Image 1 (tube, rainbow, N blue to C red):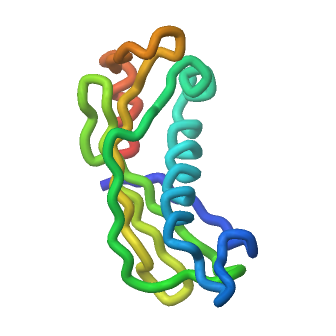
Image 2: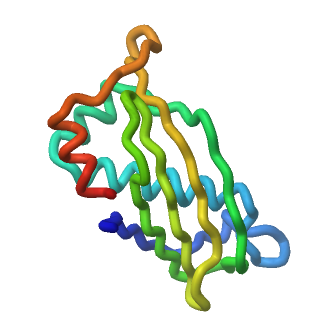
Amino acid sequence: MAAYTYKRRIAFHETDAAGIVYYGNYFHLAEEAETHALASLSDAADTLRRYGYPRVHTEADYFAPLHFFDEVTVQATITRIGESSLHWEFAISGPAGPCAVVRSISARRHLSDGSAAPYSEAERRALGALR
């Protein structure tokens, strides 16, 4: 399974008073990785401007905390390509190993009217690089 790897450090504002990453910020890490993964594909910048990607399902399993200034790695993988949806898995790791797995489903929509925006065969082939 190929995946897109996204890395960065945890910022102070992402932590609580104990210096631990607030649970909701794992979803932000997943969305950042998703954006960078899609942008890594050809013509993706134009696609990201033309369509919306609302979440229709999200869930997370937490294993270990992340802390301020930890280097975090997110492996973004598409697990299923639907007619106009993408099913993602984001494996989030820190210095001590696995921290969380976030799973989400986004439904691509036309920004103009909110209708479903099915993926073409060419787009499916390009997205296949992230499976």
